[in-house]
Length: 629
Image (cartoon, rainbow, N blue to C red):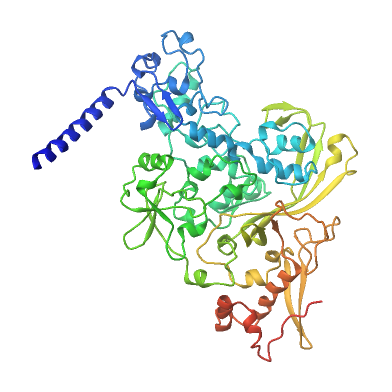
């Protein structure tokens, strides 16, 4: 019986060895099997490409032409040694979405399908909000695709100012990804040039394309922050915020000899404020936002917050993290795990609670300690659970982590949009061509401050999130249809929900929320609690003059302790709003208590657990609460 078991064991070993031998012996003639069918890869050794492009290196391990050939990416006629014949039908820069089905999508059809539905491709939210603000739609929640817009006033506005940043924009020139890069389909994230490849490309172009490069750029999963920067340094400026830089309206001459300023490749001038703690630790964007979020899940979303599933609490959990074993990894996650050569297959891996996707660069040890492996340098980062104050704080359980832990956010006010029909060299960012007539945007001020706060109220509940004044603007719609300048102008005072990506370990103090005018939505200024003749009253003196369109301070979101006008649209989302008067009073009530009681005092600490209402029943005679008019 024992010998029989040994015989079975050795037979199994021999079969495995035979299979491995067959695979190795036939690497140049194999099929890749996908979930939905077969992807044929021709015999690489028979391709004529390497007869000219001999001794070329630099490929990633999984895209080596010895395994998959050249034509699987570049197409062309692999049967001819004639230059012109062999290059017929060739795609010089594969990976653009227009040809991805014939190139990258042959081996990665599932990923391509997800990408085509992702917000980075459709730009649905950008189009939806723009059309809503221009009055071309009655809601910002309709689905759109940037490639399908026409030439309405809003469409032209998008074409002139926004339509550069989408994955469908084609990469038509050789070269590595820079701050100025936009689109490029799969290249946008997966193209990596080594220094040698950059030098070889430069020599190739200088030689009028006669000296063939020996070093090929790699296409791999090693996504850097540079890949994200081009598009995500605009609008809400997540990439620049993450590095600690705030945009200014300064010119190059204004910063000569000054420290703390930086000129980016597009010549915008930035001032250093404070970088995100994750950036300080050397973490990349994709350390948190994995392929499941970046490429999407195949579903169509209107706004980015719907597509983002990761939450701070997934890594900085309250008691213990949500995990899955290595054996339960989906195919996409398993490939990332193997490509990065991770070794923690014997450990539990953190899975995002909202949709269950795994963060393969994390693991939990045998005693419950969680760790993250930095994708930039392999450094091991210990994931600290929530602090005691966060986990036991009932009063703030509906407040998002970023509301308290964001050190600053950018602010933009006084934006005016006007169409110049005589602009001779306007550039259509969508069609990539010069046209006549262009929307122009004039900004009054860029600045920064602690984030304001707003309420996200939907089927998931009611939560306080950061908000920024990103759309306090006028649009001269009449100028687009030939009316006299200033005759048909619409004014909008819209704050936008925003996760600033300026995270710090220490939370903002109590007064910065409960006694800060900008935080509450009144705009910058002086907010004082006045006690006179035994009565308490809040007074606010704004820093900015009132805007003639609505009689509110230029940077405000709402009037001070007064209801907003009925029917007034004041947000870029239908499920996000400013505080009501009653909510303002509740916040300022705590602010009044903080005039005398320090935030670490026993009474204020107790309010975090039980709320303020039980303590109001035990008021001292010295306590003077606010009187509301």
